[in-house]
Image 1: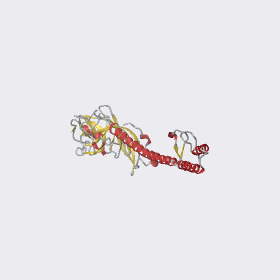
Image 2: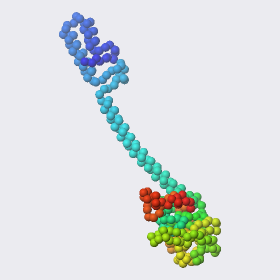
Image 3: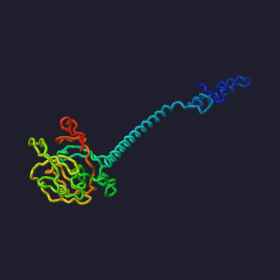
Image 4: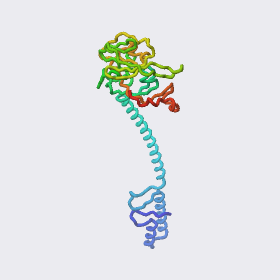
Length: 322
């Protein structure tokens, strides 16, 4: 039977019993035997509590047996807490990324892709570009779904003649258009025999090399001209035919607070010359100015088809400024 140390430092119950028996030699053997059995019973009961005493200080007692189970429980709870913390941390990172993307898209730059050829050869189908949202200030159309809580423009800066700009279609503000700013408020715009006139004066243009494009019917050559606006901005335009439907127009007088927009592919562009569809574009409808091409795919391949990139990416158009 293990020895149990007493808090008073006087030894075990057996040792006390022996000393008591020696000092009580005159007592009967029956009394000594009863005392011995009583002390043995107490010592057995005490040792059954499964406690060990390493010092007289009770605060230092430790319990043996269940401690490993407690540690396992703590370890399992700690692992569950780590898993929960990892999940919430992942959710927090995703939310922060979405908020940051929303801020960048709303106030700094928004990406667009080109689905039509109305701005050839400045912009081609499959081009991807960034539009600066701060160039013209902010309107309610600067926000997703046009949910800006105000009217007009904040921190506004007026578009300049020759800018390539994205705007909300006046007849359907859910649609984004991209054209070139040709007429400013108060200007008079007219097309005569395919030549652009601003305020009664023909815009300078010269014919340059043809634009060559591969189509399903072979190679197509299109007459290309270099136009120079009164403020010195130059760009290329295409002339598909000498008798286009919009080569001769009425005089358009641009109202105050509005702009006249045209596509560079003059015979294949629905723009401000078509009053029933586009017409004059309000200043509030401007989304931003096109700045730079960051990607370009030829054909009908989607941008995510990375296995086609070696032959479908137009590498020479990447990072081209507008």
